[in-house]
Length: 226
Image (cartoon, rainbow, N blue to C red; front, top):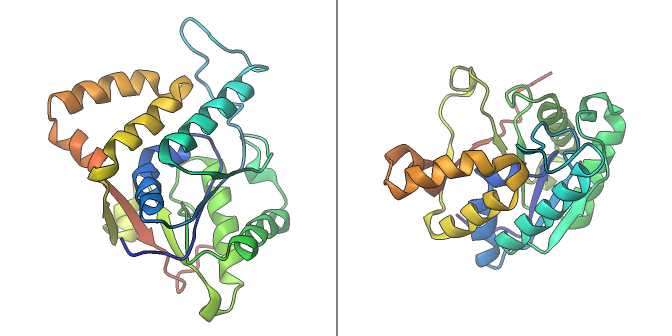
């Protein structure tokens, strides 16, 4: 991983950062690279309310906000932006409003690297809508001023469309922070993490690969996703 000037991470939900980016974020911070995380919603429409339930629709936003704050602390991240949009409505927001939101963040933070989802290959409508706004905002910038864009894609046809990821980060040194970040989002991850930590204790090769590597696609500006 090269030392970036500033990294801007843009995702729609608390916990989006935890699964495939938290090791990368932690590593950049350990390198002395400033990282800003813009989380667009509080994930208030998350399906997991506990069993037995520990939350309801009114209390879940506060719980997920606290989990998000705990997660960023686990990564060592201090610049968290909670953007105040509503979960499961990003796809219905005005396109120009979303592009301006991203453009304003880029203008303020002047990142050399932006990390988000890949449009059309990120499964959830909020993921894809966020990705579209990020791509549109950066595409409008002069070529010489554009930050690099690393994207996450995990739709079933990703390999068919994009091939293999061209950026692979070894984040083994940040493994403990990655696990702590995932555990911070307990309302959404507790059941998954119980199984994952068991597999890690058993040295399961796929679990270790998932923990120690994070994979990205560099966005190709010759591609017209629209």
